[in-house]
Length: 176
Image (cartoon, rainbow, N blue to C red; front, side, top):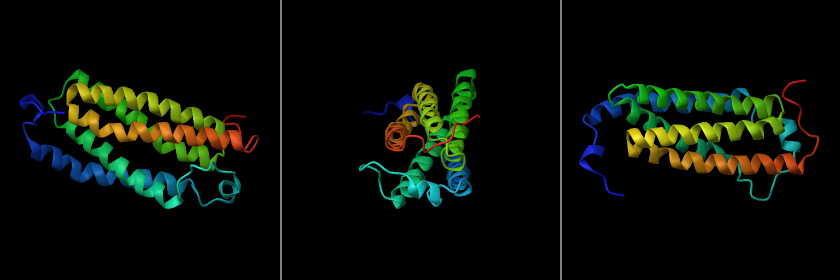
């Protein structure tokens, strides 16, 4: 991938100024969503059968810290571009998928709605892919920074689906 002159930001300092607050904000909110939902610490979750390809617990923290950092850098890159309707729409889609991302831990761990959580991830994946595509059109670097997140969401969907399959009847309905 070769960067063209048009791909070079007009003001790199603007990206880093935004990144200085966006990275900690997005990482901390993501961490809080896991902590407050009692993620992998709960007895219910420990009792579920897991697929053989499930990573160790520490890997999730490392992966999410890296992914949230890259997502924040992608957002900072897009926010550094001149404000347009296309940029605002891309940012709005990004924010919606991020809020859904943070809520997934609550749906899966707190509500124990593992089947609903599987579909929740699919919705996040669709919105994140749309956001990444729009980011790419605004600034290719921003779209590229979203690619590891999209791959992780595919993995998370696969993992969540395997947990549903291995634990029939273990989850609760989201509504009802």
